[in-house]
Length: 135
Image 1: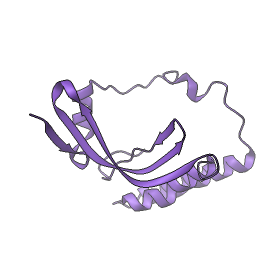
Image 2: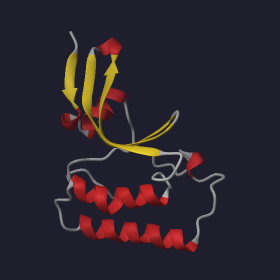
Image 3: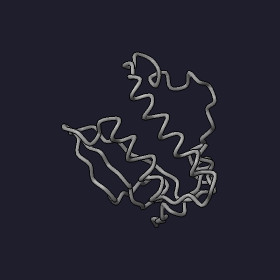
Image 4: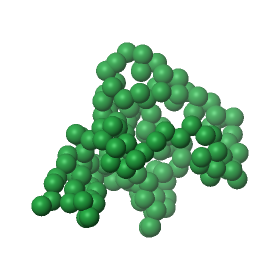
């Protein structure tokens, strides 16, 4: 029998146990995040610093709503990354199902933003509760 789980009921502890996740603190864990990256301009650095400043200001006064995070952090980052431009297009609030056939579990939820360019999908995962450490 298949068990359906709402994504909104899935917490970090569940994911850690289910998938044996562990916090990776090694800065070289994802080398592709810092190897062979294009240089960013001073203006881009200023824009990123401004997004960070706005977020840190907001996180001091919880609760921090999902909509506020989307407006203050996510939207500016997607814009700076060029995901609003051709050849990408965006879809909002897309239903998803993640399933593990051998275990009979299906997690259902919604993706806030899905950016598509043929075979490339950018999935933005966010936490809905301010109880998660966003720092």
